[in-house]
Image 1 (spheres, rainbow, N blue to C red):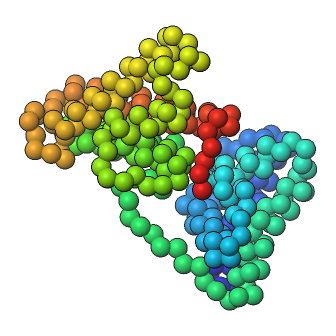
Image 2 (image 1 turned 90 degrees about the vertical axis):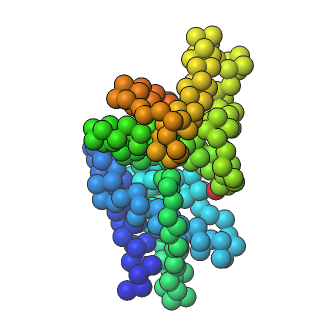
Length: 268
């Protein structure tokens, strides 16, 4: 079997099984959205479909425009409360079959070129947890300078991914964390001057600006990415890593919340 067809068929069937599990006895819940399909495998199939759409000069199906993980795909379908289980199972098949038929008829292989990056391909909480684990591992091994560098990379990755998802373009040059955060702050409606925010929240949001600036400056002073001026101690590393964890969690959940409300649009 054509390898592209095989990947698309496997992805389709896994998504159908996941949706079936999600809807089992009308529970509308599942312990693990990746029980049958990893996000990486889903993204590979998604990229194949988007590439075929580009080559055929046709619109990408909305579900593939909006959904970059298995969980998002399933929740996209489940959000249509007027649809029925059988219709949705058929919908999943139809989204893939048109491309599977095209590949089979044309006997083509869709190649995806993987480019190595320091930052996650997908903004997901799992990636954030993995980066936090790197920070904490460095602390556990006594690599406090490395922990500062990892903490900064965590925030930089989250900021860049939010900008990429919303603006649809890579960041040019090497902007500072402060510059990146300024752009994200605007996208996520987190400007301290926003009158819609209650005063206590405006104070907290203002404080985040100082935290991000501090994360940038602390890494420049004592991280392992530059010549060290100060050797950090355990309490320094804990302060910086815990601050980075707080900012990363807040930005991720704010991004998800405002996206679900439709206050921000995702570029494709």
